[in-house]
Length: 114
Image (spheres, one colour):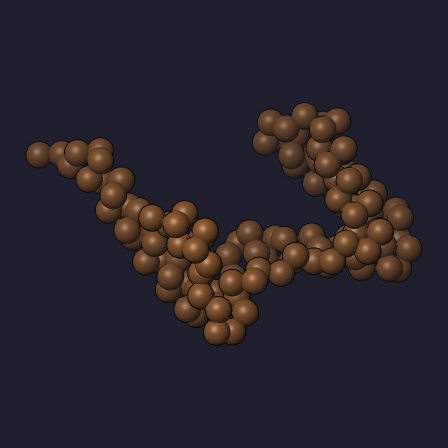
């Protein structure tokens, strides 16, 4: 007999919660953490070395990949430009506070997992 959808989703939530807890305790970065760090590095490095052409080439490749995924070209360019402008004006990389040693999930994060 097939599991009910509700039971299957509840088990899936429990598995995901356990995986997230294990990853957190091992301080294992996710694919998104690595991607965010790579983007930060690529933008700030090219800005600091005043490599405008390389930054524009990076923009071209990222926007092209976003278009393939179905995003609007102009909107992707606007978001990219805004992000580069933030970094150019001194915006700091956004740290994940919950990874600080000794910190637990704050109440909002714990509630989101429930």
